[in-house]
Image (tube, rainbow, N blue to C red; front, side, top):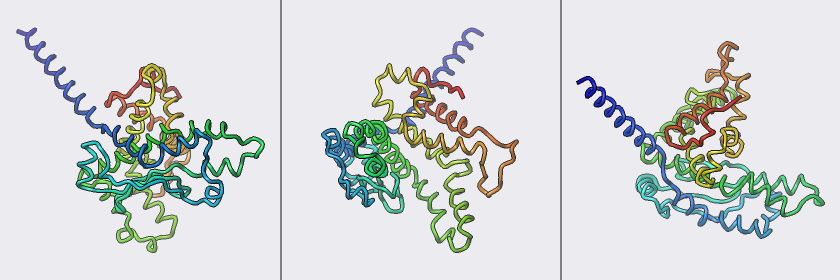
Length: 308
């Protein structure tokens, strides 16, 4: 009898584990079709093809810091069923191009998604590299690492996931950002440094950095989905978390930023954290990624821990 009960208990536990696993894996979005559509039809594929052929961005426009627009797309064009559901609730314009002043972002109050290649990279080439050292091969190698198609597709995945989560989950991102509209917190009511801290505190949602919030961790996971999509399975299982940090731009910049907060972290009220309260925020950030990647079945064989 006890053996039967133990067997039933074990079976029930295994069933619950499988159900839990399936539910957690469904926490990610499959937007492969949409990412490819934007890359190919938003002008980015043509841009990278031009770079491969040695046709570089116009030097005069780059040095003037002018935005270069490729194309505007509408969310109605996106092919996935998930994107179609989001479009029915919250249609957006998807702006594609090169920008010096704006970052890629989902703007719920403007109904826009901005997907940009950072123009500063090009300015660096035209301003800083002596003519005798400048050549198209060097430019193309730089592009393949810093502004590679894979990095850009990760950015597209990241911002699309924000839009879809917001659209299908009761506009939670829009509502949260609504807390910093000028009719809620007026810049004229506070000194600039206090206003900036109040706004940043809302963005950070109680975390030491906004990119450690659940909203941003979820979007970063979709960057990782694209990276895995572009990586051979054997290579993925060889990669470490250090490799992942180095090769995905948003993870790299966040890791470096929160590493500094180990020494200088100030809480949302502008109070200096006592030394005994200091935490290894970079380590916490990596642990958050590993935990979520494990849930979603994204961890390679060598990514289960990180040595510091």
